[in-house]
Length: 258
Image 1 (tube, rainbow, N blue to C red):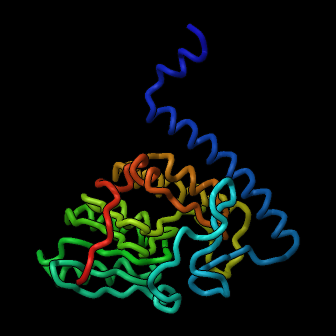
Image 2: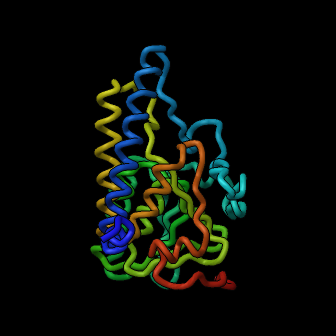
């Protein structure tokens, strides 16, 4: 049997996991090198945080044959997206979750779901991302309650927000919904040691990858995140949303009215 034939016999899921772990190991190696150089220079870790720094809410795209700017401008103004996430109940059992996923957002979200009982059927997301821990907790609760998730036309779901989106038993994106991913990064002003940074990156990456797998999302989505620096976004095409099983229905036209 040739090497090519052997590779073709390998299950796609197993192959993707192998590629993922090789890329993860490489990324962690570079992380250690970068952190050691920064620590030696007695400089702060780069903590790009689109919610607090003088940076655009939507950073430029990863320039690798893709547009150098977001595919469309989000409908919501930057000041709305930068604020801590708020929750508002809309008609038809829709809970609007809008703004930055700040530490504590998952707790507030759980309180909203508990208070609304069985009324909430859909979580409408519009967020530039934020806390990974809170995003995972929100996603798990959404799946536990068997809720639907949706991103509207010109709505934003970036950074850790797609983790929340992945929790929906049905996941719907309207045409021109802006969905993007990038590397997990340290958004605080603390300066961890190289060992702490490596441990944190490895643990967080593993938790996100495991969670997405449990939600039924294709591993290649997280590979794109690992390859994209934190000051860039990898904007997903409609085809990629479908191929990675991030959406469960074909991209649909924007709703009119309401």
